[in-house]
Image (cartoon, rainbow, N blue to C red; front, side, top):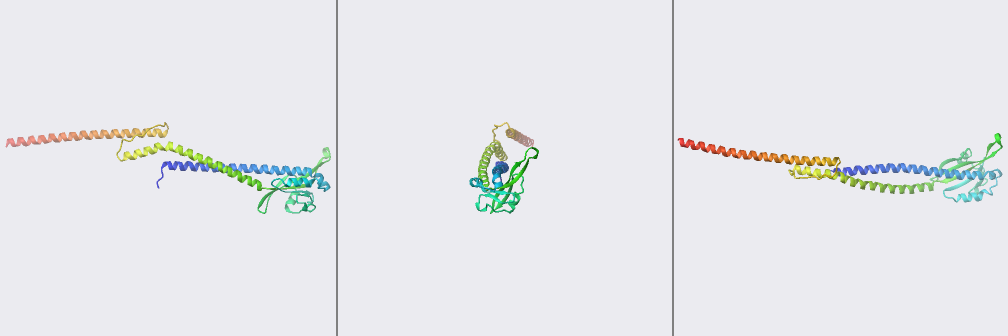
Length: 283
């Protein structure tokens, strides 16, 4: 099936809007996702460091009387999976799961948490769900002046579920997709108007040229714009007028030739008849 220039223009502009909108959407989503993750990590580190600062005495005395109520409140916060307070040997001083208090943990997450010197985030997956294990050392400063140094009392492990983060990202992605669909649709509608304004004179010239090919030189094209299309339409109109005038001159010349030929033929006939009449008179 033959596709006109209007269809090609609309298709090209629509694809252009879709590609640009998709690229911008993906880039924006990546930026927002990175920002969300960064803020999520900062929140986890801040909570872990605050707990670490409040746990120094409890770790030193292994008295969790003050920690347990605080951990219970923190555990009810959204996306908090667990809070564990450990001494340097991995013994659980306080835990959101009270059954774990007093046990010694030797799992890989605990082993890497005990080695940190500053708040560190360890991503991991469990039961098809993503988590951050935020490890923050609980430290106390001892000594004065040049003898001042920092002593590590234990470590805090804060488990943060990424389910809420992923849920928020999905919601934002749907909102962004809706906005992009509206913008792309608006762009396509604008392109339809633009293509209509640009292509309409070309379509009129195409129809006029087809009529001229059939011998109809009475076609006229209205010129309203001053751009390249308007200049082309004006030149086409001048060409049409020129062809029309040239054909008229050719027709006039042909008529003159026909008239002269008929007159010459009549004169020849008269001469011939005169010659025959004279010949008969001589005889």
